[in-house]
Length: 226
Image (cartoon, rainbow, N blue to C red; front, side):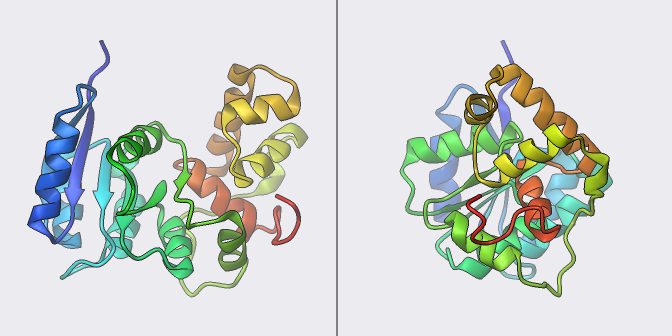
């Protein structure tokens, strides 16, 4: 039986942390290993506890969730720690900045409990996840604009094969491995292999960073249909 996904909660509202803990700990394959009331604590506890995933609020005192995410993503020792942003603030700029910072997913706090649990499993497994409010068009528009904040990865696209470039384009369009397999007429396992190889060559922590690279490199452009 596989080990439970270890979750760190980062939110300045103790009541919300308690609610999330009850929900997560009631699920056999998930467990809460710690709680942080601000971004600085989230980074510190990530270093100490090495959770599989941090459920991160954006608006927190001392250090906000975006900067905390950026520090976690930049830490070589924290390469296995994923971040799922959960916030009431679903403005376009926050979505783009969360992805640039290295977050693997972005959800509004209005999601139902089962959706949140699925999101934790998805992001912890290395998949990217965006809430319905964070539509592909909005991501494209903001990621295509210059940012004062450098992306947490830089990637030479010429290291990719033609098939890997195609796969990266499909990942940026929000397709799952199964959907990519259908598009390319290959098995889901083959699609996953192509995705993993592309991620390795690009130095991407997860699929969300593949999306960032695809837009910021110009491989995918707003209005291109992907």
